[in-house]
Length: 312
Image (cartoon, rainbow, N blue to C red; front, side, top):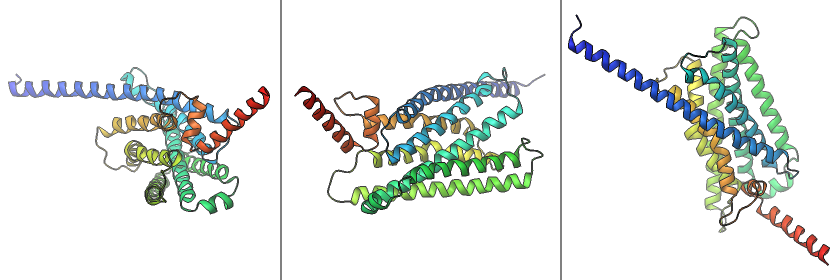
């Protein structure tokens, strides 16, 4: 016969397990909701930047980041469906592996692009004369293409060494490649933080003029968003594949923060580009976020002169 103390312990354990399940379901539901909002927001950014003939070197970075976040969120939302449905649906092993590797691929692409745009914006702030005169015309396009290509190469190497997509996996090579990915993640984080710190110091200690409201502020906010919301997903993924210790709660927490990271970027873009007391088209709001107030003023002045000429 079960003692009263033992019965109470079993009841307490069952209640704790039910509370954990309910908490995980809430976190996963929030992740799905944020993922859906992020898909809509990044889709709007992608459509506005790709359908607009206006071109800005930094707009190409935002276009690629939105594309990477869109793919990441799509895979992210699909990957957590089995956890959300609690065993009522399960994907085949190759589908789960494909979603996992594709998410990490898009994550590394987004972080690499953030590092590249942070460095380029830092150079533009520190050496404005050199940047405006000597900067290669197609630098941004080449950097983005090289980023996608190198991240795709790492993705294929990890898929070949750690999965059965291209034959028998190699445990030693797989661990070595994940260590390389960990070093790459650390280098990219240091680059992002260093470039952002220099940009912040330049903005604060520059000439006595109002600091730029557009793109530098956008970069600094995006970096802070990554450090607080995007970095936990990378730490979790590396810890899982390198067999490091992971707290039980960190699994769902990192997934929620990853959804927040991707979904909040379009909100930052449109909030920084919005004008107080005025309602602007989304295209103009996005251009203001890129720091194109002078360009927009010239466009408005040209349009106004054209209307005056037609009226005359």
